[in-house]
Length: 108
Length: 274
Image (tube, rainbow over all chains, first blue to last red; front, side, top):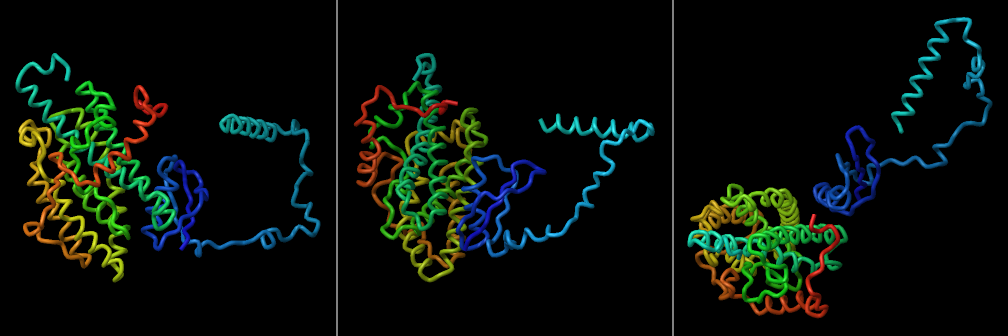
């Protein structure tokens, strides 16, 4: 039986798929996964999941739609409007720019 | 031994006891690890191969801690404590040196279970050792030992579920139990090891605690454990330097490369001193 293994490096991170192990049951799968995918690596948590329990949606099914014109979803109409006529809008835009800059800096 | 330490009689006694204790610990770990590595690429599955290799690596690491301490405490070189030491001076239990039985995975599991249970008990009896450098190292070693016992017991439970597995485990118990008793045989300076507080339990107490754990566990899995009083003990006891012929072959094998290469001193991996 095959067990898929997902490792989380730090609290809050996503568990990322790192490989799998062959094991007859959950207990042995955990033991083997611990050796192969956790120790000697930065590991906060490990998920061990029976392969049968992982549902897959393939590319054909995942990439549906996009065949009709939905440009109305992209609200571009209000871009590049000079907001100086309304002080509160200008302030809000400044705040958003500042916040975006800080996020970028924080991401390094 | 450094000159300024070997002056008084009691200091000599302390040092001899420490040396004897460390060789028991180091040799057990080294020799068992050496045996485990024979399973590389032969274990039943890739996963079990990697798991046992990891256990072996841990045991080598623990052997290193104790051999390093011998070198620090007595000004020995690595060659003195390992590569050029006479095979008859090694103090490991004969359980560690026995070759594996031909159909052997049951042998690996039972051996590991018997050994790692004994190892936990003896390490716990070193937590309050009178020697601070021993105490420091025990913490590190104990941290890795849980996995070893969990690994052995998990396999044991599963093998015991089938008739064939049970037969193999029983054969391993019958074969290994008499040699496992040598884990608790005394070697040189045993009285001083306890008297100086290096180890806080006697070997008799450790043996009793070990019986209280391994006998009910094995019996609980449908296995028959020989009555320790009726066991026909082999002549070789390990702890006193008496060993089986297999040990001398094994020693020749693992020192062969060392002699062949004839380095001035054994090489160490980069960063290994850290």
